[in-house]
View 1 (cartoon, rainbow, N blue to C red):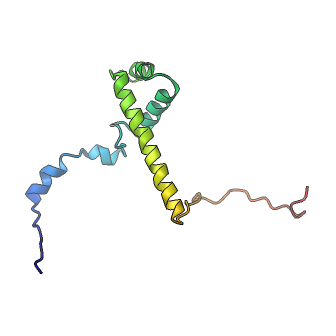
View 2: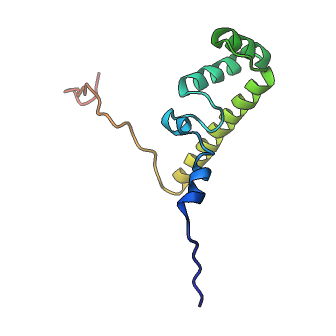
View 3: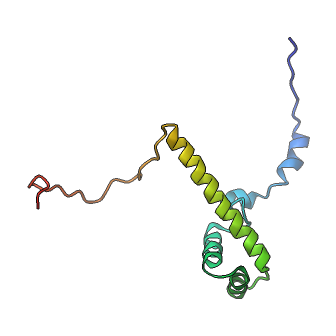
Length: 119
């Protein structure tokens, strides 16, 4: 049986790594839009509450940019599709027996009634 292998040279990897800007990793940018998480939430909120053209107008006014309503629609729909995909993955994991993890922090106050739950 023959074994296959490829030799990876650094001169080939360097240009390929330059295709992905480091700020996408450093700034935790989403894959659906080149916006910061806070700006992405704002875009989603604007797109959810009003028509895409009006949302683009509001964002352009606040951020001093020139996005079209169609671009806002693409980003908002991609963000919505990502949420649906995450929800479907979580649902499938739940059906396989993997339960979602609870909150990491303990409650700051625990109240225990001495009457056994009777009021």
